[in-house]
Amino acid sequence: MNVFKQLRQEHRFTQAYLSYLLHVDQTTVSKWETDKALPEPNMLIKLSELYNCSIDYLLGRSNSRHPNDLYPPSITYKKLALTRYLSDEPPPPFKVKAAEAELIEKYRLLSERSQSTLRQLLDLMVENEPQGPKQKKLPKDNKN
Image 1 (cartoon, one colour):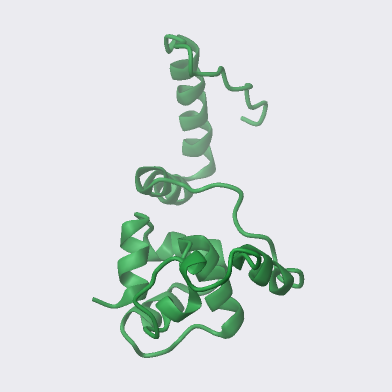
Image 2: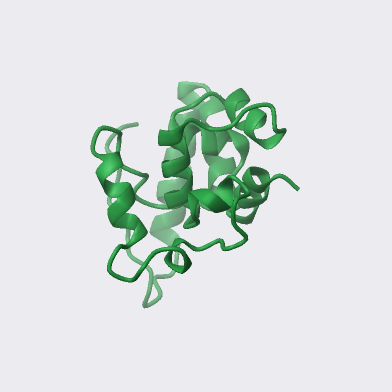
């Protein structure tokens, strides 16, 4: 299996969600996964950070997935990649589970009225949800 597809599936990302994270077209992701194209160098850096693997692993030049296996402890991969990130947008602040990404994709297909109705329904559900020790009450969205 293609390494780009394998890593995307391991992280439970859809092609659409990965393309959203990386600000590329979904057909670009598809081309990487079908060996029709390779990511540009700046994109390889982003992919290696997103998947926590080395660029050499992405390119099939190493069987060692993790970058710390390749560099001395004094040079972390994050430091190497950080210098290249300065001109690009920062990586996403959090990971979204596949089920959450699917909900987002479906939400975006709804009309504004349906989106508003869904937000109201979610507000009601959150208000009635029993609060466990690890759950926090979400602030109400005033945009309806």
